[in-house]
Image 1: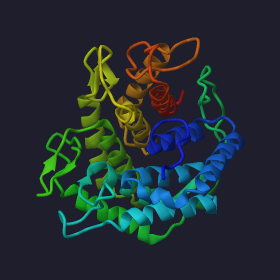
Image 2: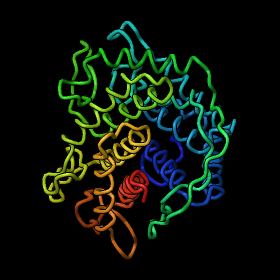
Image 3: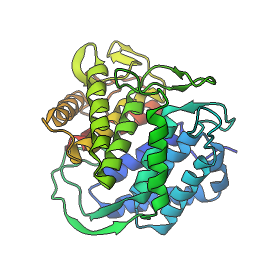
Length: 344
């Protein structure tokens, strides 16, 4: 049985699209309605959600929190997905960490970084927000400036076990070798626990956002220091060859050399969203990260298709008119994450 597809051809990409819409929506009621509609679609095949890979489950764990951290129904789903992934923790294989796939054969960076991030988000005490400041709608009409308002704080769970999960996973991750000498995050570990695979933008992004969250929760500056190292390394490493300063993964190093698959199209948008969290936490001491996000957002928006407001895969170039509709949705989600990250 397949899980329900919404806007893309991948379940985890649907979670990113929903999260991006919620975080950029100018109408909280509209965002709540969309989340409720998606939850209703997921009801019947709910048990099937555990059949997907661990990282897919954790992307959705995070998205349900983004939908509404005060909604018991969503938090119950988020906790169930988190708990199911945590069951794959295996200290006999590489000393710890959770497994990526249903066959229980691989430990990778993104799943364990997402576990830290999801654990932090389930623990957090956060402010309730009114309208977002300087955001645009999902159809990407011209950016709209709004006034942000903060209300009383509320807890997601404040359960100590989630913070313990996050710290334990980070301690294992930091000693696993998946962060190389250049502070880039490689794909995973071999069966012999040797770091393997290329670095990806989203690995760096989710890990730096996880460390940023740990800093926000604990005020331990070591977490922020590690996040800073990863952020600086990512901005240095992941640039388009035809447009220095524009975020790009290795699958799309230039507009003329862009061969990303459905997954890879989204990676640099995830990094942009994570860099914004780092900026909000006070990590961007010299303002260079915020400037980089602004430059990327202005470039991507300037290169959009003005008739449809569709943004391209390579932010430095025009939109491919022949792009697959599913890929177009993923590219638009990444672009929306970027615009929101830059405060546009």
